Length: 242
Image 1 (spheres, rainbow, N blue to C red):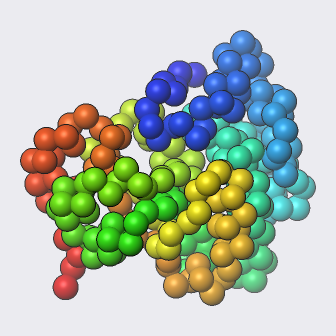
Image 2 (cartoon, rainbow, N blue to C red; image 1 turned 60 degrees about the horizontal axis):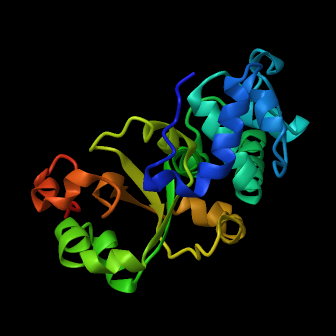
């Protein structure tokens, strides 16, 4: 297994539970057992072979209340998200199962399942002053990260996408989160979970309420961004298309 360095700012909300589960996993035994010893998840974690061949993963979770888990970092962080964001994960899984029941699994997933997949894998929640939101939605990166930099001291950030949490174990400059495009109260993870779950409706998800954010541009998250030439990379900090 890959050991996670829990020091970076993006892992702060996940550190306590992550360190406990990682320690049990390292001690031996399957990841599912390490996760099942934590309270709070609305599912029970089971080994990956419990998923029958050909059975859609999301439908299986919804039908059985169990989550197939592989021995890798991706499923480790997915398990942590089930533990810390139970209402949101349960809601997204129910919407996935509903969409599969209506349209099957062949061909295109459709806008609701597409949005769920993107956010579940790569999502981020932000509570920030209004000027930061204006610059973010305009993709005015220089204003967002340089001109308005002092305002980031008032901002709160929570990475909720399990694939993004996995990728941040080996950070790269081009990592881009998909931010829920509305301020989320981030007084605690539990408050954020309830807020987000209540807003995950098919109509809202179909409208793709997401906006990109290159996460290593966040002040305080990456030493290199203290040099403002960091933001001159137009491959990463792309302007909004006309």
